Length: 132
Image (tube, rainbow, N blue to C red; front, side):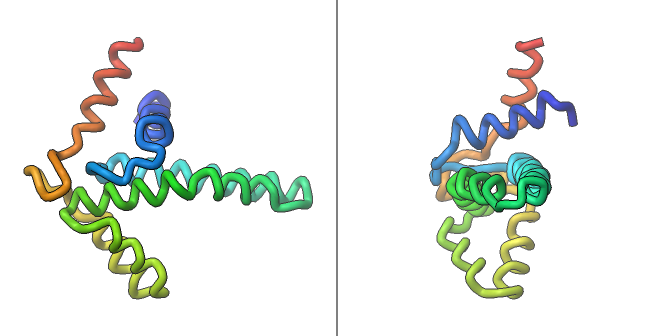
């Protein structure tokens, strides 16, 4: 995984699909974006500790709320489930476990109720190769 690929994942989620609740998102896109989000949250929390006020982490959480919700919906679409299943997050522990199991499932390889399979990693690699 190169830095260009990580940049491509972030740009794809934040720029191309900021609040897009339609379509599908691959495991690759989902998990890399969440890893980057967690790393940014840790850095923001460290910044808050240095400053003494919780402004950095609050602003980051607010900025990433809609992209994360839309990415979760598109990931659920990828396994042929409605994005409304995200409401399981409101059920402590059991709901979280169910969603994590669904998020790690392999994508549907054929078209489903939510569209054609996403080809994001292949598109990303082609765009990165064109930029070099």
